[in-house]
Amino acid sequence: MATGTLIPGRDRRVLEHSFVPRGTIRQVMTDRSPEILVAGPAGTGKSRGILEKLYLVAMKYPGCKILILRLTAVSLSATGLQTWENFVVKEAMAIGAVTFFGGSKREPAAYRFANGSRVVVGGMDNPMKIMSSEYDLIYVQEANELDVEHWEACTSRLRNGVVPYQQLIGDCNPQEPTHWLKERCDRGATKYYHSTHEENPLYFDEIRTLGDGGVELVEYKVTEAGAAYIAKLDALTGVRYQRLRLGNWVAAEGVVYEQWSPTLIVDRFEVPADWPRFWVIDFGFVNPMVVQHWAEAPDGELYMYREFYRTGRTPDEFARMVLEAVAEVPSDYVQDARELAKGEPVPPSAWEWKEPRPRSVIADHDAAGRKTWTKITGLVTTAAKKDVLDGIAEVQVRLRDRRMLFMRDVLAHPVDQSLRDVKKPAQTVEEFPGYVWDTGAGGKIKEEPVKENDHGADCTRYLAMARSARFRPGFRSLSCARRLGRSSCSP
Ligand SMILES: Nc1ncnc2c1ncn2[C@@H]1O[C@H](COP(=O)(O)OP(=O)(O)OP(=O)(O)O)[C@@H](O)[C@H]1O
Ligand SMILES: [Mg+2]
Image 1: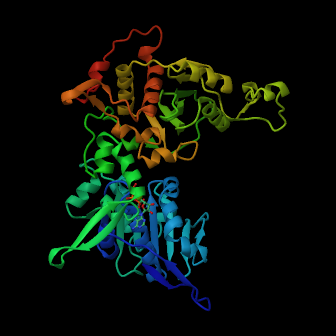
Image 2 (image 1 turned 60 degrees about the vertical axis):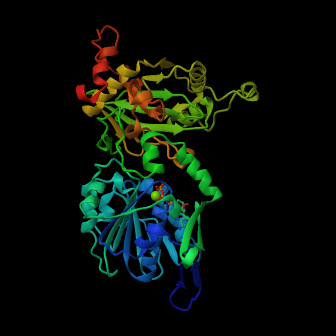
Image 3 (image 1 turned 180 degrees about the vertical axis):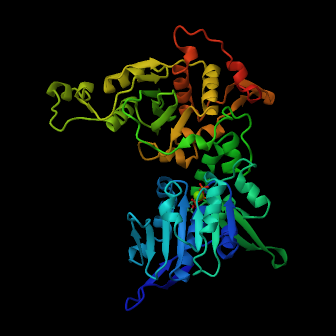
């Protein structure tokens, strides 16, 4: 769609870039409304389409300033900027018509166009650098993650005046119907677009034919890549299926943790050395294996400060990955030749720890997994108390009282792309909104949650049980779990 001469001066190389917008994105391309939201199921081309618009604008209006924003800079690099670099500015970067500037103390990271345009990138987790500037367009990826205050702060930054219109564009998958973004669209403050799977040429071919009387007929035929992608979405269940496959704005019914709120995710801080640490393990291989690292503040608040959440790792590989994050083998260490020949791992005693060891490691009841874990790390595990309803009640109370908090961006390894691809949670905090009570035949709610996408949630349950005064030896428990399990009689 965009072809042109780019490099000013003597260099007249022609830059070719091709993109065919379809449906919603075709309309968004030319829409000049001050605020736009593009919502729709997963993989419908929302982000790619908006990024292509930004690219066109940056080319068309020399010297303009655009911001690409997400809640955190880390999440933006992992998603939106991949699409931007691999598909949108790929050719321009290849010939130097667009260069990346990694940022400095004063200036944020940005893509610099040869015509003087700038596309600044950043996260709301570091607003000082990006929000002190003025822009022509701002694109907020996964806008649902932001608060309405963030969104409004963005509108106040739109006054650069180089592009003839100023615009705030967001995209997201549908959320609960009471979400502030949906309400904003419903009352007309933000223009709403809804994308569909057929709009993405990667997944659907558009076949135009002439019918009776010369009427043009349009049919969509799923491509091979599309069939594979849609099959993944079809395998989702519950609220994820509704939102990511069908694109419906629906609430999760019977959410177990109604006390959950994204405000329980807090900025990272250095954990004081004297706070006791607790680690929790939920074993898995096809399903993700999860290891959470928690620290307990002097008043009993628990903070998750590190997390491992991965599929496809054997317990010994996983244990080693965790150990490598907290300890190292001295460079002059030489392993016993006989042990090495037998393929034995470096013994736990050889590792030098960089941070305090956990006071306890709580693990689910996988005997083989626990044995392997101890062999690699030298850390003995305690069997988790697994009473589901008691554990849920403990977590509910802690979430309600803000006594169980989650530091932002604490995944200790690159995100598990196989989980992202099938739109499954890839870290604990992503599990909570979709963790629901099981509804048996006839829609009757059972006394247990649906056992899927619950691996991190299980860990939090084990930890809350382990740190609960009610379950420590010598304390007589008055179990009220069954009462606490429902919102109407939440404590
Ligand atoms: N018009 C198009 N032409 C070619 N490829 C496209 C087009 N639109 C989207 N794609 C490709 O389809 C894939 C999914 O698109 P994209 O990531 O933009 O979807 P999305 O709607 O933002 O998904 P999500 O809801 O998961 O954020 C990407 O690889 C993208 O490059
Ligand atoms: Mg997207």
